[in-house]
Image (cartoon, rainbow, N blue to C red; front, side, top):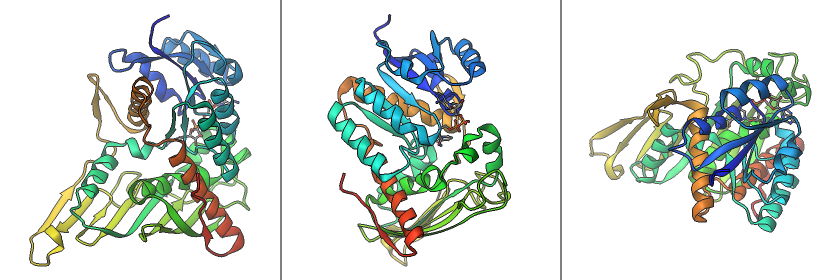
Length: 359
Ligand SMILES: NC(=O)c1ccc[n+]([C@@H]2O[C@H](COP(=O)([O-])OP(=O)(O)OC[C@H]3O[C@@H](n4cnc5c(N)ncnc54)[C@H](O)[C@@H]3O)[C@@H](O)[C@H]2O)c1
């Protein structure tokens, strides 16, 4: 066996992105040694395509293997907790896709387990690894738009039925759209402003796809008050019909984020500001690359989720091998989940709700 870190991946749809590690031995110090899925056709197809030596339909078996150091969890949302627990109890480092888990209690349990077993833990909040979001964040950190006062972020999925077509768990279980969807913009804003103090949320169901339970909300409007006093609103539109311009357009991008600062404003792919906020300074404009711009990765072009996943595999490798802290770690993940939990509390109690941040 090589001296690389061994990776085992559970769930072969979003999780397939991780398998590309095996195509780039010069860019990674790890390799995919095992895959798990309950669908045999996917095990056969991807095992062959990515030369993975071990395949199983039993996630417990995969996690317990001695040659696996890092477990990548990409199963349906509600299964994450049990897989996280077994992985940590077996001394594995963990990459878990968003949402980390689906309740505040599970978030607390995750933190307890990571602290007990002292492993590296990375939550795959993909937006933090997308180049244009990273560029916008860097621009914001440069101070050009001054101090943030307000913000807005969104998760707009005008073709959610296509995702329902892919996996019945999303409507049969069903996927909770606050944890599974709102976690994206909430984490995005937490990246900028830190802890959320209070939320107020409304939700409504949608008849756009009748497979999803008709009494369960798919669209939400959420107001957030951050501890640093920034106010933000979040739009979650997963039960809507179409998205003019598509997911990366200027009209209504899927991953929108706007920041209103004392010296200027960022709206999605664009920013405008005046140096030092001076009214007599010339107006400056900045434009950022869009999400679909392909990036060069080991001579090949990748974009979207694939690129984000490969970037976070590189991060956890580096953190394991150099004993460094992970950026989007279990605490970041747990605080995002705690904010989602407060959204549900607000909807149920019809009033604002405080966020638990004491992890
Ligand atoms: N932006 C992102 O980061 C992003 C995007 C898409 C999905 N996700 C997350 O990834 C996870 C998977 O979503 P998806 O879209 O790939 O779903 P999917 O339904 O398309 O694929 C899930 C896979 O997991 C397998 N699976 C189900 N139960 C299993 C079990 N008990 N053991 C092993 N395998 C099992 C299924 O057979 C399927 O192949 C979810 O948590 C989802 O929220 C994240």
